[in-house]
Image (tube, rainbow, N blue to C red):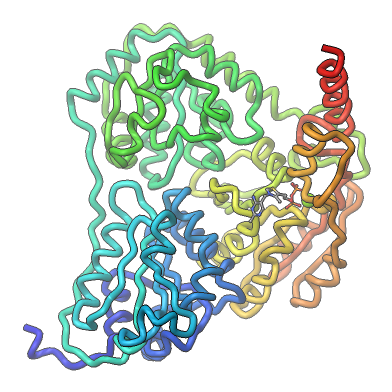
Length: 567
Ligand SMILES: Cc1ncc(C[n+]2csc(CCOP(=O)(O)OP(=O)(O)O)c2C)c(N)n1
Ligand SMILES: [Mg+2]
């Protein structure tokens, strides 16, 4: 009982609770508001604290940890300023359904509501950004509330949880029994639902499966592939979730991201049954809510999701199944395949279109730096277990379209579209898996948001390879500008520092690549280098997507505007 336990400070209780939940690594930026936790970590060498250079980077690292390991990434930040910086990664964990536990220092209990130094009401601040926010006001409740935080972060639809820790509570000494480890709670599909799913599938002529969302273990990925292949189903993935199904297998037909192949979008319109497993049918997946009717989708929709509140949101499914992905995938893999399938040709045709899309478009070729050729080379070069991280921006269309993802390799990208994710996620991935090849893809815009985490990489003694696509602009926004306001460029041109000199100043290996022929040898040099490496790809700003050029967009917009003016 508690009376036989030794007295520990609130900070020591927090660290003991983290250990009990199997935490081996935490990311953060120090703050005087949580000195007791830092001091307890001093005595706990089995939790590796990664000292980051900005809380946004630290939060992205914790998020990438959650995606990669399937358990909560732990983030430690200080009061108002630290929490504000960290919010981008917490929002990303929320949108990406990634488990995360955030510990935030807070002002002393007797100062609360005076707007004390750096005080923020975290319950209000994080209400729409986190699954749950609590404040631990009594040190003896640390084990209870930390346990609840891990339960909530991992159960149902995973997500971020924030615990505010008043600094005087962290100093209080109390005896409390530590509890752990957490046990995530996930729903299982019912036998009747599975039978109905099979019946609907058997009646279909042009079915297509969509997989996405969080919570996919390697086993779940294997099981869902087994189900797809046993039923000869074409499978596409939602935005930045391409690693759920091995892209080299004949069932894989592409991704429904921001740069989805028009042929795939057309096929989904044509399909008479959509089986969506794990993905929210959100704005990007539904191509701005245009792909299906609202609320009647206009086709058979089977939607499987871990959270009840996502089922029937916007679109009304024919059959809704609340289930965790490992549980659903295992049950689906064990189902008797549907007899007399009518869609072998349909599946082969959709796959054929995906394979044809691996050929770079002529419009974007014939440049000094041929990105299509470089991506094709990388597709063959990357080992099976390579981890590819991505920032947000138009450059990400290149790895999304031309690389082929799979497990145990991974694709880690912000489905929230947060710029600045690429470098911190790559640094975290390399800290977690120092022996695997980690390649981070960034634009020049995104790289300049969090590139300073290369210093964290340096301090940790491990380094990913960062590829920066330098087109000297916020290319994505320039693309939208060119479509809506052709020729009127404002706020999107960038003047960059010398990225190679900058990377070298961090102690990284660095090279500027202006010609296709120089890429392979530079990449091999980077891979052989023991530490971080940066390759700056000097990209022709004309090449605005994998499919088109800036001037083609401008011409289209001008023609459209002229037609409008005449009408
Ligand atoms: C944190 C954040 N700020 C702004 C945006 C809006 N935004 C989306 S893409 C983009 C430009 C990205 O530029 P860059 O990283 O250079 O990639 P490019 O599109 O040029 O390939 C911007 C500003 C965003 N998604 N995230
Ligand atoms: Mg750019």
